Image (cartoon, rainbow, N blue to C red; front, side, top):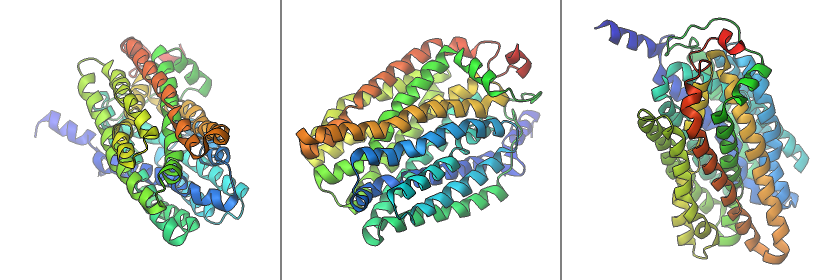
Length: 441
């Protein structure tokens, strides 16, 4: 065995575990994360009926109540993750959000359910920044988008389980038991993760020296905001997630009200769309970005813009067609491309910053994404639906959903603009190979 192959094998093994195993376990965390986060969406019609809620209240429950603390606490927890064992932060966060999902099943009032969702958001805040940081220590920049796309596809698997399992369990056993079924597996996976996943050395794959202390949060914010590409990436992800979270929150209700599908039918349909079709798009976007990015790094952002623009012509038919067959056919491309922005965006932000900024950088990106997209998307679409209901009746929700095309167009423009300065921002002396001394200077 040559010296190069021995070194490569060493970089691919961490604490006796292959990096593939670690990536699979991190992806499993994301699967459970999205299962617990989105099990609510398939249950919204039943919850609305039991608590006599309006669409704006459903948007508050499915988006804002979760997103505010999820986004806000992600930043201090990422600050902690840049300083301590990230594996432990992920495991304990997972225990919390899984437990709060179980608690959601026992809510006796709407406000108790809101409180439980807030608790779920607090728990989930500790996972993504640490996960992004660990993956960046396992995969080189040229293969990072592909690895992150594999991880991001856990989103689609989580949606598949949430919609398929949630729809069936709600129809057969009630919405409360669906929360229990979603929360209990996470407690088991958290223990498996804690005892089988090692903590990789920071800078492991890139052979970077992890010297000095992590920068303080204001320093990280100033540095990131000085990068024009980061500003456009951040706002682009916020606009993408605005449309994405509004869709995952209200498309089950749209199919129920407009096309009179049962909970089980909606669950199977959306499991295929979001879980299988969406997973193909989420994974392929990162792989394509890695492939084209080797020739020109700007393609990491241009790929996302292209994916979004290809989806736009299908939205009017998706939400306005009277034929269910046409609706489902036209849902394929938008659903396939709906989360295509995630892996390339995460990968480029991780490549823009030094080692001990990576968890904080991911958290700041997630803060902007979630406050604007998750916090405002569902509640805004719900409010538009309520405002249009007196004149449009059950058609109000389909027009409210169509309004998200505006945010998708804005996001495509942001990614194109991010690509224009990405190369120069990566080439700066304070890029991914910079020391903390350089950043402070």
